[in-house]
Length: 183
Ligand code: SF4
Image (tube, rainbow, N blue to C red):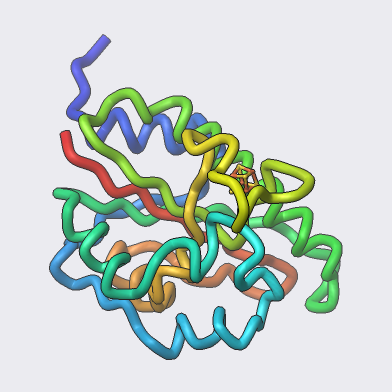
């Protein structure tokens, strides 16, 4: 059996967890864009201020920027799901729920390999029937994955930097997450 580099090990485990694609993004190109955060604040997905994974709980864009910049590496990953058609809302919600489980699995597989890590996933946290936000601390901080959109990332641009596909066409939804880490 060969000896794998850390990145090869991460990529192999991304496939093992069921992710579709993964690629590296240079931390220096990251932009936390106000218009994306504004979509959160306008409650476009109805999760604003409802849980510890979304704004405002994840902090200001400046705090998100500082947090991201404290890591040495960033990997962007995705998973493609099939929908019945473009109006398949149930399929979209199911995909989002399944994606969060896939990110959990990826975290279980590789989380112990790093001195520090931060996983971002798609949208709100759904671990508890009712989130403890804002009255109590998160009940499962080890399983809390902040929303990638909440950090103000333009996912289309990130996908371009990572060399992975943003969209896989009609009757599909492609969901994204990220891993920041220090060795
Ligand atoms: S794990 Fe529970 S308490 Fe923590 S953010 Fe998720 S839903 Fe909220």
